Image (cartoon, rainbow, N blue to C red):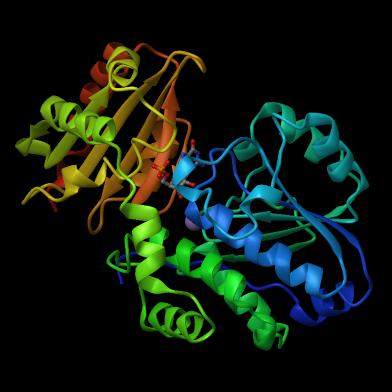
Length: 345
Ligand code: 5GP
Ligand code: MN
């Protein structure tokens, strides 16, 4: 094993007793939620409803279109669009579950302030590196591929696997599939496959889920992919691939949220490349959003933390830059030589 896994297990008995009385519960995914964030929050929401709680998912902002088919999706409260209602749910919640992130700044400034002012106790379920300590109960395990797998283990620890419905199984399977790149990343373990098998037994339709997530390209999205691949630069000396997309290019191809999902992985598919990056200009937020991926020993989590105000996992992380796109790219290329040894190990 090339790096140390870190695990914090909560007192499941204490959680069981906490959940034995009906409560008002808010369940929060991270901003710009992905399949794992939406899948885990929706599955947990249905589970907690079955236990008799009044629970609602409050998402910091809208999820990309390719997740809208997920069971229960349309009941999600959008903090940006339904702000009064969202604030009320957070303020009244006795328990606040935060899923698929481990620092409150991952929900955005305004929602972070609401969460920090909330009186409810926090429960964290998450698989990212370096968890913060805001939660009364923390379930954090960086060795597990997805928060969805952790929600399965959470329900298992509470001895309630029989409460997993077909809808919940569909949600959990989706998050495991998207966070493992369809069961191909190193984070996929024998246990992941066992959980996936259990979810299929419980009603998840694996082929249909795969199709719903991946076979929904528009022609313009594929044209955008063509543009991204044209822009790609490979620096063999550092085994690094760099993709960039300007706002102008995104506009030209009718960019919709979710269209750039997974593009960064193309760089890693090049023989010899161990570090792949994508820099995406967002003029509205005045940032360059960056995704980092690596293969093997090189920690993009550490790289993103050290240079781009970000973080994530050992082999998949993200960050941002306040510089222009070209200055961000120059800055990145200036840093790269200091990693020459690490990238060539
Ligand atoms: P992606 O590149 O797909 O946006 O994100 C890859 C991983 O890094 C995800 O697990 C995501 O939660 C995490 N991540 C992405 N952006 C950021 C960021 O700005 N800060 C932190 N701490 N993690 C991020
Ligand atoms: Mn995740």
